[in-house]
Picture 1 (cartoon, rainbow, N blue to C red):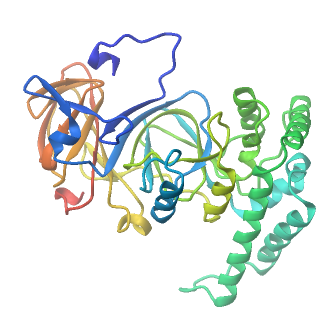
Picture 2: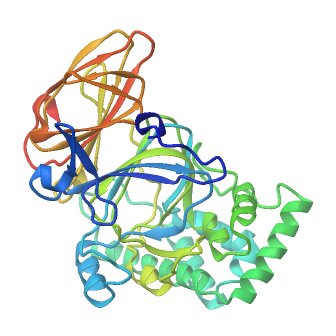
Amino acid sequence: HSAATGEDIDANGTYAELWMGTHPTSPSTVQVDGKTMLLRDYAGGDLPYLFKVLSIAKALSVQAHPNKQLAEKLHATRPAIYKDPNHKPEMACAVTAFEAMCGFRDSDQIAFFLSTVPEFAALVDPPIVRAFCSLVEKKQEQGEQKNKEEPSTQEEEEESCKRQALRQVFTAVMTAPQAEVDKQLAALLGRIKDNSNAVAQAPSSQAHDCIVSQLVSRLYLQHGSDVGCFAPFLLNCFHCKPGEGIFLAPDEPHAYISGDIIECMACSDNVVRAGLTPKLRDTQTLCDMLTYSTGVPDIQTGKVLDGFTRLYGPPPSHADVITEFRMTRTDLPASSTYQLPGVGTHALCLIYAGSGCVGGLAVKAGDSVFVPNGQSVSLSSSSKENLLIFRCFAATATPKSGL
């Protein structure tokens, strides 16, 4: 942004987010024939998505975004806090190494930590711990039934019980008295300091999983004695490489830890927080709204559209419901030309790296370009470096080239 606008960077300041879109909190403007006007006015109305660049040096809050029905309720009853009635599913694509927590771990991993990390278990009433671990043990003894198209009524009941038990565990942790959080976190950090292997990795941890003890220590250094420091025992921790992405559905817990990402989302700023933040915490709302589904989130590498462009968006389970946004990533080699396929709706393009031309308009890193009606545009890169462009658009029409 500084490179594109000439604005000075304060070396002592922090810059967390850059927004592009029509959300009233920070609406974009557009240059038209030398004049500045609101993007909303030029586009003929609000865009259904919000496009962002995030730079995360310090872990962001343990949070979730409400579904549409809940967002409408929260906005109606507490408009000063929840400023719009929209849901906020998100798609994040890494442009540097990216760390995050997202979704609940498999129940057997959470049970493992409850059994092996006494400080974590101490935040939860023993009957709740026993009930949760008993359900997990029962499931392990029964084993997973294979090759069944539909779950049985008994399996559905067991899944419901497991989710309710996880809800009780999570709620107990997030609402634990601060004095108890202080006591148990100090004890845990003392054990980690004495023995870096004090906290064992959970069984069946994925290759992308973090070293939990290291993450707990990092979160403490950043946020002090905060209940969110216990989140790694509950949430999946993972790393993404540049070009990899994750989809975040409404009502799913997450916390970004570090790295730079490009985000697109439904046009909303509704966030329900409960840890790792100095901002308002709405812990009970967060605990009540989550789905409590478990399992490792899918890490996307993008659908290959051609040799230069990949498509990112909601998985098939959400694609028909969440149509507000899709995102493409185009990496054009130096001294190349390319026709970016049209998408049929208004689109925003961000030039993340390099320089060249978009539709005949000279651009450089930090520029963003509004493409009306999502028309196909020609791209050309300079002779010095690749041109890396991200584009956000709505999936309200059938785009060309499989988009």
